[in-house]
View 1: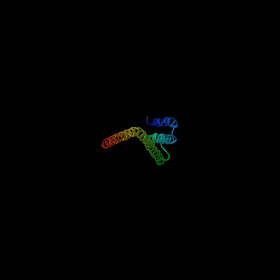
View 2: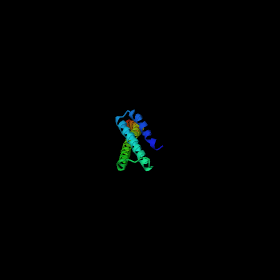
View 3: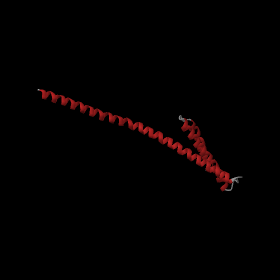
View 4: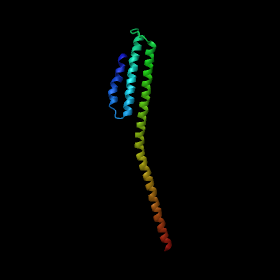
Length: 130
């Protein structure tokens, strides 16, 4: 079970390659590849702990495992920041339009009020002249 976990990330790479945005595509492919390699090296480390495999360089194996884990986390953070940025842009797009409508209605209301006041002032001036 633990040995095959890296396949989940390997299978996500073609989905990442189909993304339209070039930057998101590169970030997601790098994230999935790094996490797949992290789990691959982690499986070898687990096999060593279980006594089924004796690596020539245990320190190098642990270093590789930690490196791919770090790179995978780094690209995950970058991908999540980009997703947050896109979500924020969508939210702003949908909240600015109603806000713009509200501002337009307020300006229209004050314009109409000013026009009514101008009409009333003109009527008062005409009445004063009579």
